[in-house]
Image (cartoon, rainbow, N blue to C red; front, side):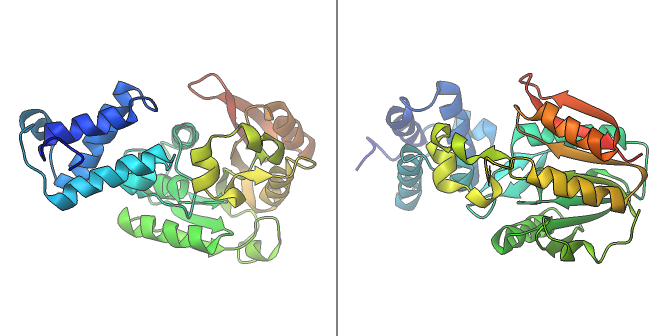
Length: 291
């Protein structure tokens, strides 16, 4: 047997010993506790008080499998099968990008701007897992949300997350760089648009971590070096047609492209263009208003 005994404490020691070179003690404690809560149905208090609890053979194999996956750089969120975002739970796997903390900051910015309003209509473009639109629908009063995604697999995942969180997004499959997907909308009908589009340059690929490159969809990550703002340009032009007067456009952006995106929006005629930093001090989000 790969553990000294089949107790919870021995399993924890095995987990920590095998992964101590890759993760901090804090990360290991958090990951083990989340896995134990999910697999064994234990509470946080149980994890402290029931160190001598015995695990079944299948439970031991589950933890050994988790260790092997973490050693091979599989994202922990994929192993657990879910992640928390905006205090909601989202299913996570290879079909879409894992929701990130910086995207939470973008969502909070939108909610702050609209906290006293009800009955808003919004569109999430390049919606991925659905974390943005689902969170907005959950927290905004009587909102009507639409989301556009190019990948059928990501759209299937977002529908699962929609059902899991009991929200009511209208999901559309289509290419935001095309024209057809917008034809169902009425002009000047949206209060705001939001997008976290592909923005990582292909030339940055070599510096990215293996767990991202091997386990998350490249379609949602990368954009050609010769036109890094292609999604921002197309979405912004369409937003001018479909946003209401005074409607807002929100983007998550590459930390090195803030001034370029702001210049693009200003050049197209948007007003009150604002660049915002995330909690790490990086310029990661932009807001603009239709004149």
